[in-house]
Image 1 (cartoon, rainbow, N blue to C red):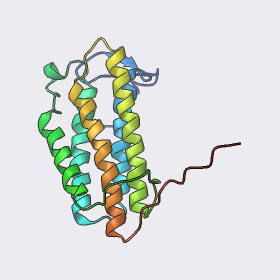
Image 2: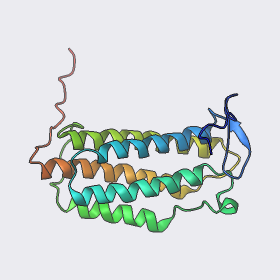
Image 3: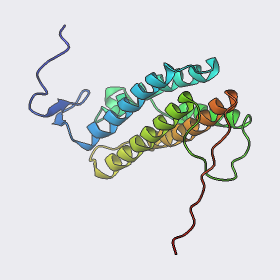
Image 4: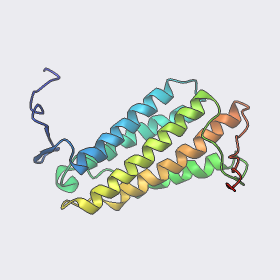
Length: 186
């Protein structure tokens, strides 16, 4: 089987078990950004991460494939791609809560920096927030519903990535870098 099909040469692509749409369709933007996030997490995992954090990110990558499958379907229930729900969201919340037990409470904004691994997780967090925005745009523009659980999942994932980046820095002995608010102009 060849990887290229030539069916997208005119700027269209097929949804899973559904119609063909323009490659700049809101649905394609949404699941394409989720795919980008998943790929960036793969790059992140190529860094030297603590084993327990790598395991969390691996599970997240599997979850993102489920999110992508759901978004790639105009009717996830009929296509049997309705895969994201309360259980996955609860797991993300549990991981956030567990990670936060190892962190000092935040008292100010911090810069997205530190070790290469933490910085990579911060970039992934930014991509996650963009994916969340793209899904919200899709919700508002689509005749085909997008489950609220997909937005919740991405929202919690962004929070998890933030605390994981902080945890990676703590484990590496890297201090937080607080934002220094500039003086107002005169």
